[in-house]
Image (cartoon, rainbow, N blue to C red; front, side, top):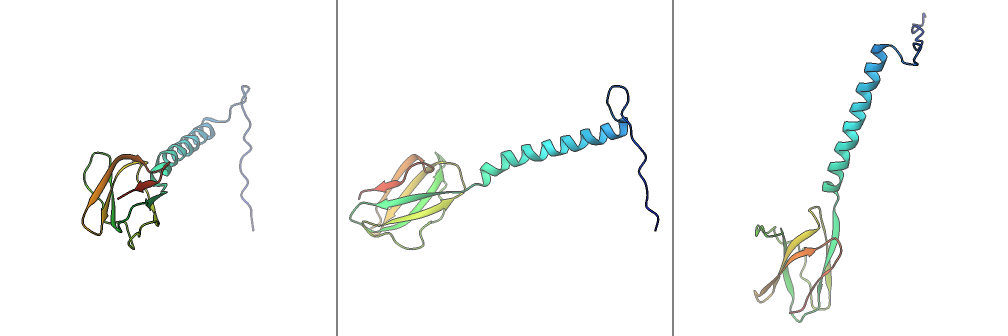
Length: 127
């Protein structure tokens, strides 16, 4: 079986390769750069973080909703089970760190905390 031999490529007097090889190297460089920049921008948006609702009050929490700051478009209830007094619930969300958080209690009363940094603090409620 015959093996194809690539032609010998020698750099010119300035150490550069042929224009075809230079062009290919430049294209590969820019493709790699575009991929790296794209991943750099996309990865933080996809990263999720956990935050915790702590019930320091006397009433059962029946619903927890979040919204982007000042949007008032509330997400569906994040709770899988009610949060009794003295207990807490953790959530994993993929949005940004600053959220408005609304907590609803078993008696229908609700409380809202605005512009909460859910990446750094727990939401503690006392009702």
